[in-house]
Amino acid sequence: MFCAAISTWSVIGTTLQILGSLGVFLYGMKVMSEGVQKVSGDRMRAALSGMTGNRFSGVLTGLFTTTLVQSSSATTVLVVSFVNAGLLTLIQAIGVIMGANLGTTTTAWIVALIGKFEVAKVALPLIGIGLPFFFIGKERGKNWGETLIGFGLVFFGLGLLKDSVPDLRTMIATEPETARLVESIVTMINGHGFATVGMFLALGVGLTLTVQSSSAAMAITITCALNGWLGDLDTNPIGVFQNSAAIVLGENIGTTVTAWLAALGANTAAKRAARAHFAFNVIGVIWCLILFYPFSELVWKVTQYLPEVLRSANENLAKSEIAFATAIFHSSFNFFNICILVRFVPQIARLVTWWVKDREEVLGYGKLRYIGSSLVDIGELSIAEVDGAIKRMAHLTSDMFDGLVDVMGRPTEDLSQRVTELKQMEDTSDEMLHDITTYLIQCSTHEIGTGNAARITAMLRVVAEFEEATDRIYRLVKIVERKYKKGRDFGEIQTKDLAAVTMQVRALLDVACNSLSEVTAEVLEKAQAIEDRVDSLRKRNNKAAALRMQGGAVVQTEMIFIDINNHLEAVANHALNVVRTGRREPALV
Image (cartoon, rainbow, N blue to C red; front, side):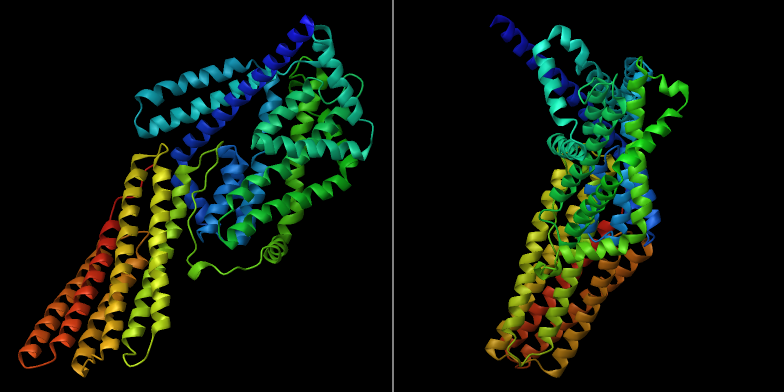
């Protein structure tokens, strides 16, 4: 009993060591990813949001981005976010996702190379180099320091993981009961032909769903294979490799769940992008399963031709061959999958369009949802989604003003239904203000650059101005409705005077809506000139109304006329404030 208790505690201790090593690796991934985003966030945003319709350039963009942040989950979640914001089309998104799958294979190569050198000789110096930058550097220096520290922690975590997973042959002497249990499980799974491949594939799916990181799952897979947990390295090395290859295929399916979860609550286009990621990986796994044995044997043969300096990376030649064969399998599978399916991107788009049916979006303006991951935070890059959300809010404000002009132009008709629609638009504006404000606050709780902090402040001001503009517009709608119910009719002069004001306000709204990305001095000067004309017209119209009242005109009608003039001028003020807020220095990262 005493020996059994010792064995149990030993298993618990080993398990905690493995989990701790995995925690260091995942935390390093998080720190490195955040640092890279801060160093190259604006360029990364520009690369993704500035995509053309060329699917091949999309693949390269996804490859480059994922190689930088070392997480296909972060890239695909970001792509779903961009599609939700309308910054990427579905066709463009599929290309980026394809490249992301290839970019994430870098992790397998890093794990395979770990045995070539003492990890501490690389990890600790990287952390040592990054530490001074992190504490005494300016903003950009701190970001570089954070990147180096994160990269060092990734290496350090991988080294700890390699040392924490016990070798099965060593366990036979120290913990024979546990070793025999593992051996019996592996023996039970092995030897069933293609069914064995299916079981290890399911294990890969489950492993990735558990750790929520294909990179971490890959590190665990190779480490377990090297330590004999997937079969006997001495008697059947190619069998161990094929087991690890089957797990890799499962990990490619499991990693799609992150994007799927990110798309929950997003619009139809974002859901289709997430389904496209799933379809792309599943189609790839299907053809690879059909060709599994010849494909894996070809990869194994290719591994034999690796330079001796790589094949001798570990003290055991079979270990090196399995590690590099797994890395080659992962990279070649994703590469060939891209080569096969990149020509069928339109067909994949049609498939997911059929899969995810069009649904009625609330007034077509959609909702904003903070996109993030508990493992890899993309708060810095998530700010990009707000650009699309603000454009949608600007579009809503513009449409609402057109609705007001429509109501004003039909003074003798009962437009109760139209008023109800405009009320719904005003409610949607309130919801968008809440969503965007909450989103930006969540983004700002993470470490972001000073320039992006100023950018968030400006965005908060812009959405507040648009929301106040829609409030004013709806008040105007209610005034016009009251005018209709009271039977207060405007004369020809009053109608012309209001038309002159609304035309200028419309022009200023156009300037505000079209200058959200960049406001030049000329644009600001133009907006100010229009607002000055609106203010001048308001004063002229109100003075004319006062004179008409002195001449015996109906006071109630003239007061409604003055009310409308004042509210129109207030809408123009809000539009001018949007333009003024946009006249700022570009964000620095």
